[in-house]
Image (cartoon, rainbow, N blue to C red; front, side, top):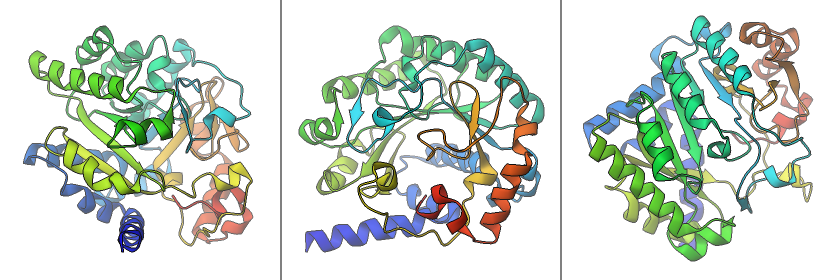
Length: 336
């Protein structure tokens, strides 16, 4: 019975994730107050401009930049292919980062996702990156495993000009120490929880209006039985809790162990909503391109608009509009 309920829950979440509007309503129940709901609505406005009737203008400008500060990571999660990626490891040059943010601010990009394949807080200048994003009037969203935080780094982030449009998300993949550390290997569950509470307490004591602090639970076979316990533990403590759909089959094509059972039937809105940038400036098709096989330009030499309107990238969007997903191996078996 429990397995059946878990399967139905997973299927329901996946259906809800298929639409930004439904996605928003699914998350409403995890908010503690109207203020938290308002903050989330602002995030929806930034990330899903189609909901607010401004989708068309982003045919020429991406609303969101996803920037990879580094692809180094201090963890070795069983669900993540980063450790097995064939890409060269490195840290984004700060001058390149500033060039990208200057360009983004000039053309009207709304937000920066400051994470990709790696732990962003390992970048030695991550606080300066956040400060520069805020200096240019953009919002940021950073997802972290929470371990590299310390009091000094947290204080500097809170003094960077951050506000309620910004998000810091902690990836916590288990309600218990045993389950979390089974999935997020090389990471102390106690350290993550300690740093999360430190961030909450310092934000309160410093009386700053942000960032929004959330926890993300990525559901998979190993932790599905702890979903309810996780929600119970963190609801009412954090600004909100995010439960992902089941990712047990994620990256199966990357692992090359078996063909993915997923077949795409709808176009991917990420192609219109987000530009993904590797640490070396390469612009890739999307965050699923772990090995960097789908590169469309480089922001060392090009502007955001030049790459966004590249003929090859526009051709990919045209293929998605026609739902000819079998022509793009990366997209065909993706369930995002």
